Length: 114
Image 1 (cartoon, rainbow, N blue to C red):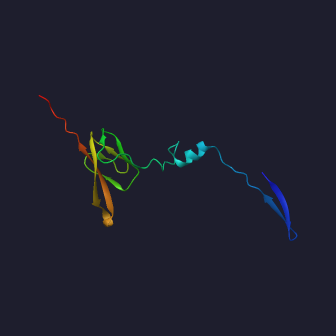
Image 2: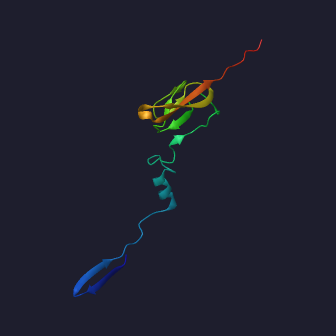
């Protein structure tokens, strides 16, 4: 820490220098959500794309009000697939004419062989 005393117009001014208080790059990543889950801004959002095949229980979105559950989807902010199938999206008008994306899962049809 740097300490200096300046005399300015007959008054003593004590100046204390600031040293960098920080840490390693690991700590910075932990604050941004890279390592810990406390600040998980980076992990929010859509986890699958349209047309992608998913298994039952797959997380489709995390922490979002833009997406609403549709057919074969469970949850409110964390949407998960209720069955195996293919993901597709539908745009609808929500409250106050706000566009809302509805996440759906089209079930996989298993063909029976005879």
